[in-house]
Amino acid sequence: MMMSDKGTISILMGTYNGEKYIEQQLQSIADQTYKNWKLIVSDDGSTDRTCELVEKFSRNYPDNKVVLLRGPGKGFAANFFSLLNRNNIDSEFYAFCDQDDIWIEGKLEVAVNKLTSEICSLNKYRLYGSRTKLIDSNEVCIGFSPCFSKAFHFRNALLQSYAGGNTMVFNRDLKELFETLPTDLKIVSHDWILYIICSAMNGTVIYDKQPNILYRQHDQNLVGSNTGMMSKFTRFNRLFAGEFKSWSKMNCVALECIKEKMPIENKLDYERFNALNSGLLNRVSNFIIGGFYRQSFIETCAFFIMNVFRKLV
Image 1 (cartoon, rainbow, N blue to C red):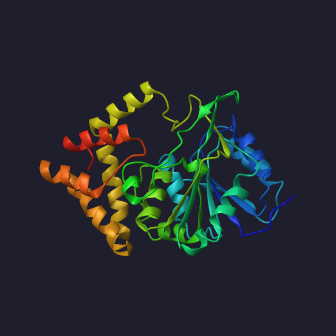
Image 2: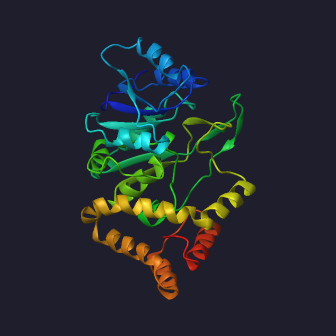
Image 3: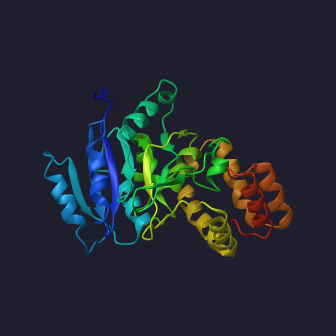
């Protein structure tokens, strides 16, 4: 039974040499219980059959329901940002989509229902994200993404994303903020910056503990799930070596563009975050007073140590 139509969802898919799995992802979009979608694919210079397979899929749908665009050719983050930044992609809702996952058939329906609930509808900016079910290259379940329980606030967003971009669905007002940003803006990742901007504006951030996508883990993944102690340790070493500091600088450039629109309490938090680049006592006090945190207490402690060594901003 098809659910009631609550507006068009523009599915924003970034592709690059994805011929191996993309047909399964496209079929899972076709199988969605929510039918009012359109698919905009931005291909970043594939040299395999990716574009051919998208065009083949598009022939099943008239009236430009499936559109293939040429991406900027500067990597996955820039490719997704180019879709966010386009003011000619206009719909009530938007959903990010990777080329190699499989969507459970109710994914869009669940997201739209939550985004249009009575409570959420009161907020101008709305973002939905969920956990994921992890599968290997043979579609065997190998686990789930972490289950978060702390509040999804700007003070958390400055230190981590809360859900994979492949799970995210959001409203028009939130996308319109991104249309005002410079076209040459460099971002770390599309999911993280979406969470940062939404929470910076005190938007509603929905976290669904029920996974609605099968997130494929394989050698070609550009961004993995980062589960497992060894993976976390290796990642922390990279962050401590300066990777996180460079990410923060990129995120702050984006935040500067909307700073004047931010609520006063978030402006103060943002100023405290920037102060994490000052003297030691200032860094420690602003981290504590600002209440910056990761979803994991242990990781928050690790980031506090990084702050002591001026590795955050």
